[in-house]
Amino acid sequence: MLRRLLLLKLTSYLILSPALAAAPVQTAPILRTPTVHRQVTALYIRALVTFMTDDGTEYAFTFDVNGQVSDIQSSYEHDRTVVTISTSTVGVVHTHPRGCSPRPSEQDITVARDAGIDNYVLSEYALWVAHLDGRVEKVGNVTLKRGDLLINAFRRRKVAPTGRA
Image (cartoon, rainbow, N blue to C red; front, side):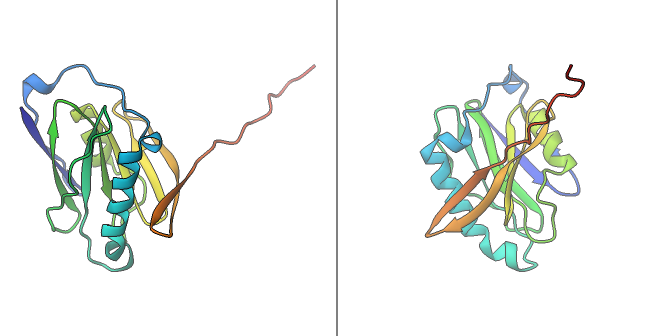
């Protein structure tokens, strides 16, 4: 059984089958899955023109708990992407073109919650994620070098405890 997600910037549209509203599955770490990393790199290369022009097209793919990826898809419409979600899907990675915030939008957060999957947003310089529990965090900065997308993991600064005796 499949369900289709439509990721929109201005309006969220989500069709979920009640049979698919099962308990959420924890996403495999995207940075440690070679197949997913290769597909993120391919997604970035496909979206390069949208990072440099006002094209506005978004591209996306899904991945499952085993690291299997779908083909890169696009609706070829401004600020909109349609992806097909199966019961084994645990994440979607989509692009934000030039002019859009690199962070997940409110609609991206809603899609993550409603679909029960992590929703990654890839922009020209960064990778962010809207988690299925509603949290948003920066995964890291991205740079394309020699045909490979380098993702420099974002590390929160450690703050020294205060009030030491």
